[in-house]
Image (tube, rainbow, N blue to C red):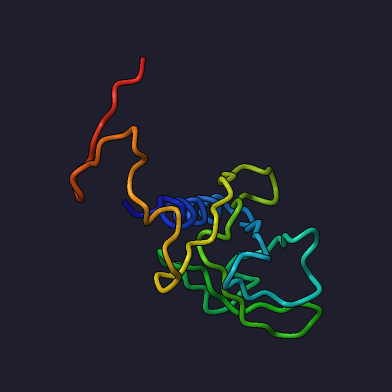
Length: 137
C-alpha cells in the first residue's frame, strides 16, 4: 500500500492555504535525496515556508515536494522526498500534522537485506500478494 504521507501533506497544504495561513514544512535535511541550501539546516532539520507567495513552481506528488525559493536573497531549487517531511503546519497557529520518522528505502540492487529473508522460522510462510490477519489477545 502507498504511504499516506504525500496525500496528507497535499490535503493539509490546501487546508492551511484556504484558511489564509502560512504553510511550513519541517524536513529531515539529512534524508537521502533531500536538496536544500547548505548552511540553513539546524540539527539536521530545516523549516521551509511553502506559501504560494514565498515559492515558485511548487509541485507536490507522491514522490516528493519540489519548488524554487530564495534563501538569503539567492534563488535555490529544492527537492524534498515525501518520506523526509516530518511535519506540515500553519505558522500562525501551529495546526497541522507531525509524521513518524521513516527509514530510507534501500535500493533494490543492494544485496539481501533483512526484508529479503522471508518470515522467521516460528511464523508460517504467507502466500505472496495476499493480506493476512493475526488474532491478538
